Image (cartoon, rainbow, N blue to C red):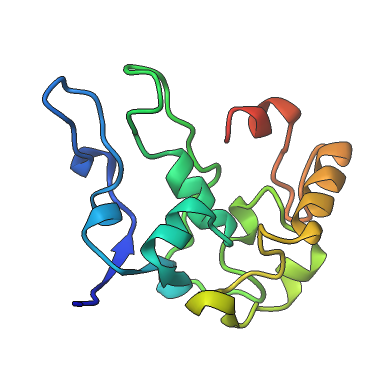
Length: 164
């Protein structure tokens, strides 16, 4: 078995379509065994491709997947976008590099850089609030209740419902 690591971050212009013109799943889903997702120059999630695509642990990975065209989404519909602006490569900050754009962000995300944690099944992630645990749900609920994240990103129930 050949193992390749591919960075997920497919520009919309690079999305693939089937014969009817409808978008298909990311090209990496059937071409790799392992997948690494990068944000602002560092790996934020990696693991077996199917596991990463089916159940992302990192909010950035989930946001990328929600904003990717697929056959399960209506053709011509507006895709969710990731709010905010990407961090310029030359700008380094304390804390998580994705915190200013993450709807789960809490104070800890702004003050402590998350380490690359290894979990069962060959997965790794760089997040204080992995999406498979209750802390992420609790943080999102708290951010919804106050209307914004610890980084000041506005969060509304309608954003969450549509995957923004």
